[in-house]
Image 1 (cartoon, rainbow, N blue to C red):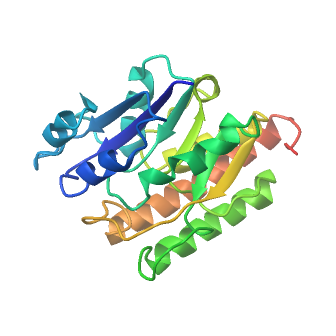
Image 2: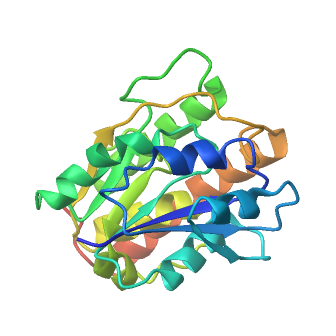
Length: 235
């Protein structure tokens, strides 16, 4: 099975080497680092360690993920992973297991169900993720606890969803569209550690508020569209 790993980066020179070194070589067919205007040598480090580096000058986490997805070389499964070493790449087998065993079409790594040292996730980030996951459970009937960035999916499933969110909405679009289309979305516990460097979202008040508002609005909007279209609620 061909597995492509996509890692969006922006000034992650302190961490990207550890991320790439910890990815299990026997499970990854290709590693694509999608870099957004880094000025600290991130793309050079990634290239030296064997990753395929793609420059995406347009900002937006979702945009970087979409660029990587479009560039992947005929994968069976696509994995998305942050470049800050907060999620552990060595836990890739845990994330892939439900897909490889035929139990899932999309898997999400839950940071709130796994090992999480004190201080790894700011309280407001943990609260926001729990609240958003609870709203998804209520509106969509999907049992999840977190909107973590460490996730994977069958390539043909991801492409069929016509993903298009370029910024904060990327965190939920795959989940919501997958659930509404009837695909099997399965959550697995993964560990989570303090990131190396400062977060571009949870590390700032503007980023936190902006992400929360956008994500919650999208959850409600997709549910409203689904109900007004007269389709049945997924089981």
